[in-house]
Image (cartoon, rainbow, N blue to C red):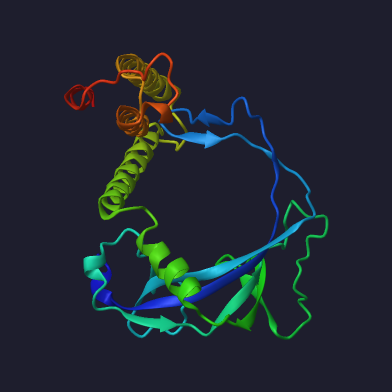
Length: 275
């Protein structure tokens, strides 16, 4: 929990120039399971040259540690707030950053014929953006931020951050789901590490055993999901829609056209026992 270290909600304007992407994909099978893993990877897709530029920007907010001077370096001082309960925000001050960096992300883009970037590197106002490994991946120039307004700063900045994942209950659910995903990734990494022999290479026998176990688990899961869908083919959102439609039909039958009537769905107790 990093909230004890934060003292400011910083409103920062972001804007970037980027190539408009387009990929040539095999839409029949875009993902494949990684051997010896329960995770999937996207199959290679070929980038297509569009020679079109997109400029996007807007106000964003985040939590920052006391004494932060660079509100654009989020590696050590900046934190997202969208998964944090509002009860932890009460002590945070508000600060609007009056400048921003216009980023040029077009350098080296496979979607452009000209790959040297839009911003002129010879201009003394333009700075190179370099990774920790020394690789150039962009350029930037400092610009005065737009005049903040209630709509741009509060509604599209603060309120967007507060409600990004929905209600407090939905936000807590997303947070828990992310935690579960992290544990799944850790478990999967440990599984793949266990397949390595003393020489650091994958042991074919261990890989075969892992594949057999994973295939059996996936088959069992697929059978379980098929049985659940057969017993109840409706998702929760479908059930809510049917409940609304049924209430409208009971009140005013002319509003809903359903010559054969609305489909029946399992009651709440039945759905809960299935879950």
